[in-house]
Image 1 (cartoon, rainbow, N blue to C red):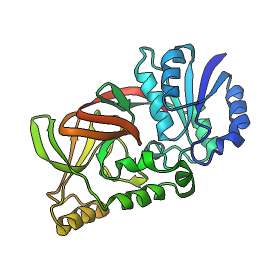
Image 2 (cartoon, rainbow, N blue to C red):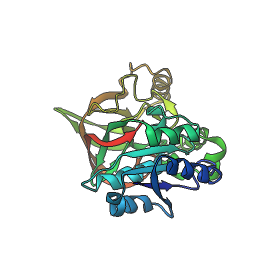
Image 3 (cartoon, rainbow, N blue to C red):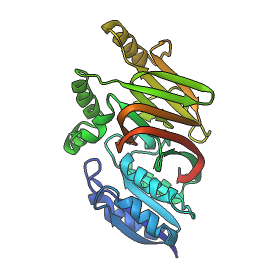
Length: 293
């Protein structure tokens, strides 16, 4: 029999996977898999599990939010023999699942994880770490890992907006030297996003309309520090209308990009805290991981 490792976060979303667990395992067994199940115990648990044990399995299926998928991908990027990953989204926002067009219905998503086809998608490398769909800093980025899990469960991505609105009172800017291809940017930025996703923070098309998950390129958005309320309004209008006509916002594609800041900058990787860094080297690992879609 084929061997399947099922990794799940029992606390993602509203914890509904607990009621579906027996049905999911039964479905896996009926598809001729010998199943090992592992509920994640703490942050980073899935990374170590995949790094240590994935070679013993034919298929890895994970269930949870974007953070759970991020940990499984991060672990897989650290091993030589990379196994395909099935994903059953159960989080409050599920950005990358939206980009992959995975259904919200648990049974349908599980059926795809077991019987879909392999899609080789790009993975981001951030210094010595990995991310599957976004690395970001600045305003709104602290929201995802500071927002109370119960609030996320109740409100979904609206929780991010509520928490973000509170941080608008004090917008912090980071002085940065940014390089990509032959371009050098030096400015004060309140937000930066290096992404490979159609949806970020529950908002679709925030990175543009021509996002391709396996083209070897990131979509990059950098927002300059507004000097007055008029400039702030210009930024907000540009973001809401998705019209890139503001000199206060840089939008471009790149396969690698470097950031050098005058002080430590807190980053998020796939919505989870990714550490504070003065320097960040980000590159696109083209079609590095196979996900079942």
